Each structure stands twice: as structure tokens, then as C-alpha cells.
Image 1 (cartoon, rainbow, N blue to C red):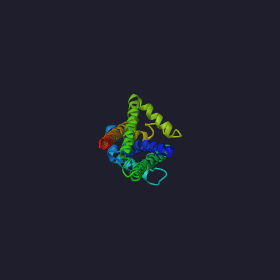
Image 2: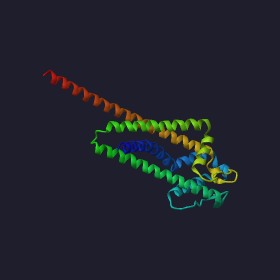
Image 3: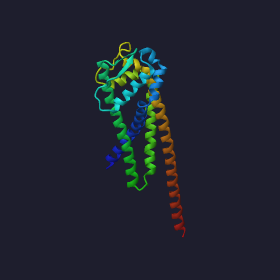
Image 4: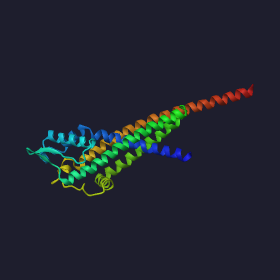
Length: 246
């Protein structure tokens, strides 16, 4: 029973960071603003010969690809006035790997949120609300863990984002299809490394804000719970002393 309790709490500590980071990443991947910002900031239209509106249409096709059942991405856009499939076989196969990664992230995010909801509901129902303080303490610890992960990742990225980016690819992919040349491959030309750095910063900022909010709310709930427990103990002691005096 003790092992089951420890396992369920550990899974909560894992689920909270996954839920926050996964949700923010999912929102950003599907946000048109991310692509508009990146394409404009890094002058992708001028560098690729693809008009801005066609770049945005291409980004819509990519985000749709992550959610549909198509195995391979067929991305056709006008380049210098000629409409064609701009990704080579190598790029298409890499996008297949990227899709598997993104879909996996989506599933982890959904499972994490479901676990948090089910865990919290079961605890509150089984204990009839008496476990609120400890539940808040677990969320407090989960929030602190999330902040720690983001801070460590942020420091490493600030020191050398290129190294972090390289390590991410080495861990995430079992092949070298991600090694592309921006002078020959449109995928890397459309989405340079700095594009992903900006996206990482946005995810980190959103996650820090949410983790801080979770930590503050949980801390308040814990203090409130401890205050009630202390008041209850004081009342019990006073009652006991009064009965003895009688």
C-alpha cells in the first residue's frame, strides 16, 4: 500500500511538468502568431523566394499534418512563381519523425492532464476533502519541480542553445535525417535554429508563469490548511484543560 501511494505521488510530480510544458508547446505549435513572428523576424520570404502568404499557408499545412492521419507531408507552395513540392525526400522523412514526436507529446500531455484530474478527484472523494492540505503540498512541490526544470534548461540554453538543440536531436531521433543544409533544404531555411530558440523562450516564460501561479496558490492553501489544523489543535487542548479543571 505504501509503495502504491509513493508511486501515485511520484507520477503526479511527473505529470504536472509534462502537463504544463506539453500544453504550452501544443498551443505554440498551433499558433499562427509563432509562424508570422518567425517568418517576419528572420526575413524568411526574402531568403527562400516564397511569399509571406505562401509561407503562412505552408505553416498551416504543417500544423494540420501533425493532427491528420497522413503518413507523409506533401507541401506544395509557389517558389519564385512556380508551384511545387518544396521538401525533398530526406525532409519529408524527417517530418514524419517530427510528427511522431509531436503526436507523442500530445498524448503525454493528454494523459498527464487526465492523471492529475483523476488523482485529485479520487483523493478528495475518498478522504471527503480531508486531504486538501496534503494535496496542495504535492502541487506545491510539483510547481517547484517544474520551475527547477525550466531554470536548469534555461541556464543551459543561455550558455549554449546550439548544444542543447543538438542534444535534443540526438536523443529524439534515431537517424541523421535532421542534418539539413539551409542552402539546399527549404525545411531548415524556413525554420532556422533561432526560430526554435524563440519558441523555447516563449514556452519557458509561459510555463514559469503557470508554475509560479500553481506554487503560490498551493502555498496559500497549505498555509490555510495548517492554520485550520493549528486552530483545531488549540481548541482541543483548551477543551481538554477545561474538562480537567471541572
